Image 1 (cartoon, rainbow over the protein chains, first blue to last red):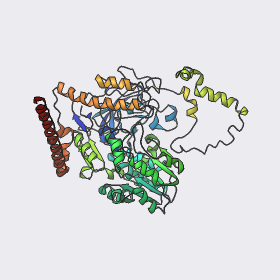
Image 2: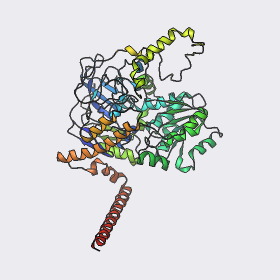
Image 3: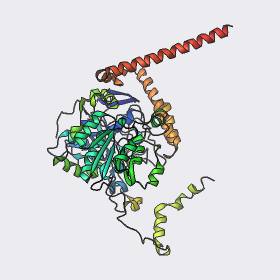
Image 4: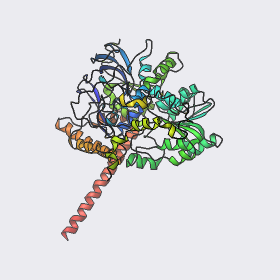
Amino acid sequence: MLAMNFRGPFQIRADRNRPEPEIKHPNDAIVRVTRSLICGSDLHLYHGLVPDTRVGMTFGHEFTGVVEEVGSGVQKLKVGDHVLVPFNIACGSCPHCKQELYGNCHESNPEATAVGGFFGYAHTGGGYDGGQAEYVRVPYADVSPTKIPEGMDLENAVLLTDVVPTGYQAAEQAGIQKGDTVVVFGAGPVGLLAARFAWFFGAGRVIVIDHLEYRLEFARKFSLAEAYNFKEMNDPVLFLKKATDWFGADVCIDAVGCDATGSALQNITGKGLLLQAGNATALHWAINSLKKGGILSIIGVYGPPWNLVSVGSLMNKGITVRANQASVKRLLPKMIDHIMSGRINPKEIITHRLPLEEVPDAYRMFSKKLDNMIKPLLIPPRANASFA
Amino acid sequence: MKNALENRIEALQDRIIAQRNMERADEIPGWGMDADPENDPTYPMKHSNGADHQRLNYEKAPQQPLDMEILHSIERPGVTRVFGTSTPPSGLSGAIRRYAYKYSEATATHWMSLILADRVNAVEGKLDDLRRGVLPNPWVERGWRAEWKHNRSGFIQNVATTALLLTAGIMLMKRKNRRKQLLSKR
């Protein structure tokens, strides 16, 4: 089959000779991929920032597909069902899943206890091949995969597998109160959605900070937010303090993660020397831009083992930190309702649609922000064979 | 000496000790008097239902057969009920990974060894390609084709800078070698 094949940092192949996946467990299903997205967090893998990313792996944790085969223990899914597959691999019965922390399943990732099981996200994410392929093995098929609701646009459906619930959870875990000033660092897909959803919780003001003008312009239109370029500021923290009556923001959301820019020291120690898990500039700015007693929501992805940020300020300012991978299954009913009722149309963030054969181009373009790319969608050659 | 506590780990099991303490709660002055179920900063992400405290006997799926080498964190007793089967460890990078997994996720040795293994693995991948007669195609695989299409001037600038630096490096090496040869002749 055709699948993305990682060959080392900054090098990937559209490989036509990958073996098709097989049922390995009674609760598995095999899904023929119909749409697949590249996530901003895939770029951390592409850039070689996530430990235990092995050559030969297929990335991709945002995909929809048609069920082609099910294991003997699968009860709910049927061959022919067209499903959206949340990026969390969740058993549904461990203490974490029982309490709806589906992103923290205890029975899906042998390699790292700090991380749940995710499709196509290195062995640090459980060693599963992902959905930038024609076919994928989907474990615990009865737990998270969800039939695409009738009438839902396929591009909105595939965005429900990660980026929409992730953006929502960024705002939800921020504990936004009516009238709050919310600052979102990063105008990538997750940041754009987090800013959009901040209004759903009654924010009084939503500010997006980035350095790419085309993304800031997009944030103004899509997220209905104020958007500012940190390259036009001497010090973003000082700018935000001045813009918030010298108090600081009520809530800051870090929607950047370990691939930030804006600090030479962070860049050299994080991306050059790998002495920390990437560049944590956005997180550092977020901590410092908060008011005393403010809330910090971390949704940007950081790899192990550590990052250089001002922990002393967290303590002295009495900041509450709330962070997690999105629990997609928990949020799906609400997200489906928001989309079907027309309150949000997330597919507007998909700027590029490419055949899976062009996956190396898509990664390069996304990584270098070429052609004003915001969110690339991949379409496998057998995607349109038949939908249920 | 360092293992003294680990050797007593059976006697230090969390739920057993917690249960014992709660059974004698009336001996602990003030036990539970300020407990407030609403004081839960995990809400609404976590729907607390007590499952954390019943974690010894949760229902588990059947075990996926272990038909290949799967490394697992030493912070858990074994592999999870399902696991990914992409790219089992092999070669020199595999040996480094096996070493890394002897250390906990709290150690730099674990993660730095894995990063080293990844870099070694990238070289192994290129050698493996050559062995199978697959020539590297950076034009496509590194996305230079897309760069040429969408950022031609930047691409040309990068290539020119790299070429300039390489040429300067080679010339510097040559000059050093020539000086060494001259010195050795004297």
